[in-house]
Every structure is written in structure tokens, then in C-alpha cells.
Amino acid sequence: MDGSYEKTHVTVKEEAEGEEPEFLRESIKYWTSSLDLAYTYEVTEELGILFKVGYEYEYEKSDSEKSHDTGFVYAAGFEYAIDPAWKIIGEYEKSTINGPKGDMITLGIMYNFDL
Image (tube, rainbow, N blue to C red; front, side, top):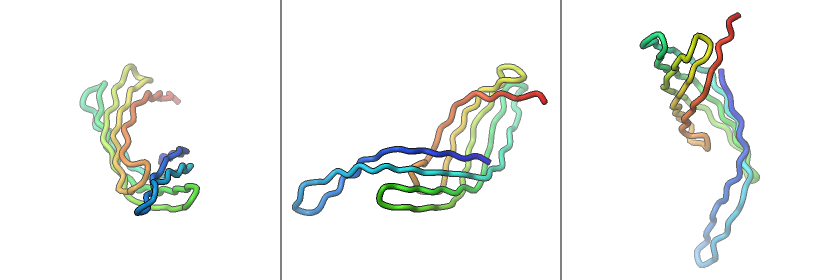
């Protein structure tokens, strides 16, 4: 399961025929959460190819409206083990929801706790 939150500002240009364009600045907040199934295929001891598919919920609130949507999310990426505890991960994620999140590219570091 994963989730995200973002707050941003956008400028929207509205034009009416025969009038000067008007620029409106809005604050937008959105939350997403998804339930994912992920699998890593180990190519070598250090390198793994990651596959992920899931179902996502997105809620968006702006100064002028609120909306929510659901859809599927899928991703592919890699994991590269620097040593047994540390990995570098990269992922490309695509959502079927037409929203502000859109496609996402992630690059990060993962630490595996040995419990």
C-alpha cells in the first residue's frame, strides 16, 4: 500500500470572446492512496526488475471545486543492491486516472532492516 499528498499552485488562463484574458491563481491539494501487488524478478544477485499493478483512489480539492476518482496503476522499474542492506531503486509509474499526478518517475534509496 502506498500514498502521496501534494499541495501546489496553478495559474489558469480564462478567455471570453472580445475581452481581455483573465489569469486566476488557485491552490490545489490532492491525496492518493493505492493498494498494489509488486514482484521483483532477480536477474542477478545485485539486480532485480520490479513490476507493480494496483488500484488507486485520488481526491483533489482546489479553491473552486472538489473531485475524486479511482483507477488502475501499473509500474516497472529496477532495484540494484549496493550491499545486503542498501538498494538503489528506480520506477516508472502510470495511472489510468486523468489527474494532476499523471505519470511519475521515482529514484530512491531503500534500506532493508534485518529483524
